[in-house]
Image (cartoon, rainbow, N blue to C red; front, side, top):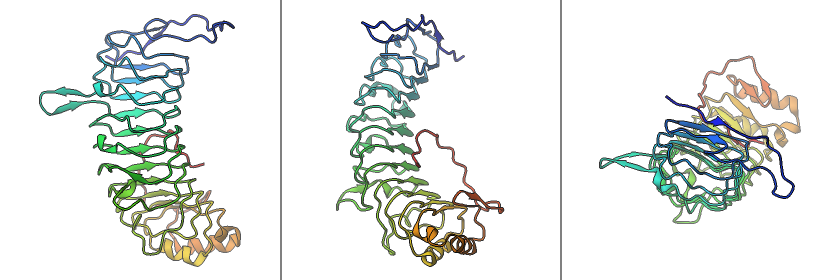
Length: 333
């Protein structure tokens, strides 16, 4: 049976000479041998320690603490869910032991890793985590996507609010379904010849590229059109002047705050998206130059539309898609 940690915290009085109180796992926070879940957040825990007896631990959440290093998890081989976002971690290390070989080929290891809001500068330290399905690295200082070959089952990559300048990566897991890299510094859809693009996975369903400097895609481009399962595209806040060629699977399209001008061309592009239920194009010239005309023509082109910008329409969406992804740092704004 899963138990939660018992807090045994003395009054949090700060000593002006010693600084703010730092709490300790196993001392201020009681740990037991049969614990499967630990959730101690916003408590100024300074270190991962005293976890060696927690051999049954499956979920460890230490959000918004003072942790600087990933350590002390050597005996937590059953761990599946690790949340350490909003700490002071600079590198990803000491994670290899979370892979537990049972028999010859059966691997039991980490499935979800949350490291947002830290000070991580590189992905080069990612170890081989063969069952990891979700990696959250938002709000760090990463400049390049790399080492994805060590994550063969990765389905969700959340890496918004970093310093990434390219869609280039070393290898793309075919399992990848969600790519969220809004609020970075990407300026091109292309990658150097001979290199891989993060958009190569044909299983991508959701793509978030808002608030970069993404340019217009050529009318004959297949960068996005070749993604047969893509149902959500968020490219708001870029420098695009036209609606890009898209697959007919698109249900939600976010292109507000770009430089799209030609309303007639927009309508023609949207007519090719039979499942389209939500579209955001506000604060583009095609909308700001003639708002009444914009609304009437978009609705004429998309009679089954459920939502236009912030306005929910009367018609119920003919096509929906259940989004089961986590809600941390989607970075639309």
